[in-house]
Image (cartoon, rainbow, N blue to C red; front, side, top):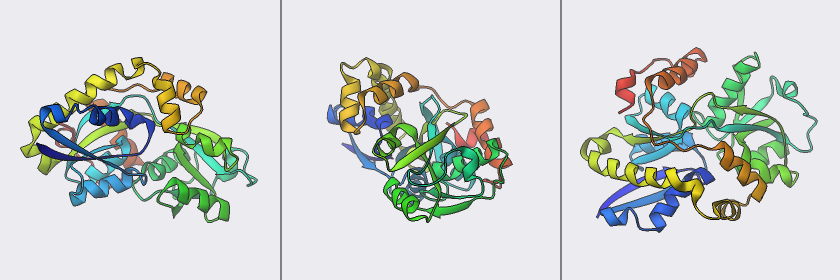
Amino acid sequence: MKTVRIAGVPEHFNLPWHFCIENGEFDEVDIDLQWTDVPEGTGKMCQMLREGTTDIAVILTEGIIRDIAAGNESTIVQIYVQSPLIWGIHVDAKSGYQQLSDIENKKVAISRIGSGSHLMAVVNAKNQNWNTELQFEIVNTIDGAVEALSNGAADYFMWERFMTKPLVDNGTFRRIDDCPTPWPCFVIAVRNEFLKTNKHVVEQILEIINNTTIEFKDIPSIDRTLATKYNQKLSDIQEWLKLTRWSQKKLDKQTFDKVQNQLFDLNLIADKRDYESAVK
């Protein structure tokens, strides 16, 4: 049995992995796939890949491309979710901020440097023609963001819209706008050292997860399963399922270049990497 460590966020996008693990599909091909939930998100997973504490990460596209450009010895082997991530822009419900223009030049809560919440805050600032030299408050997790926004340590926080919706519904946050990623949101990245000696194992893992994601939306009552597991309203999950498209394809050069060029233009990376060295 080959032990493989994989990391991802504890969000509805990743339920297909848990189904495959629980159904013993990896066990059947002698792979012990050990999943770690990483609520801190992409910045933390980049660190785990660098330190060798995970072999594979299901990770935000812009985050891993930025970290590979900064020297992370990992490779993107596939797109996992083709559709954009819809980043909700949230403020404390008791604050006076009502629209996007109210938070210009305000402090943004981010899980960590290099995370999606960091990179997309800069992308959003560019989209609004704001100064992209932002002020950050590092909060690690969504719970940390709730605390930072309520005590005034930060003014706004960007996180996946549907996962944050319960906090909007219960009056903790107010969502003032959305900022979708202009590219596929999640990719699967593998440490180069692991990929070099375990290419066949990685191919088997991709084949199993791809067979599940192709049929995921057709699973009976999948909307109810997701709503219960992730504390979501059924109507919200049904909307999310309509918007979400999983992928079984390789990241193409055009998309890679688009992401990397945007990061470079925003001074989020100093050097560019060749597509061939970052994507296999």
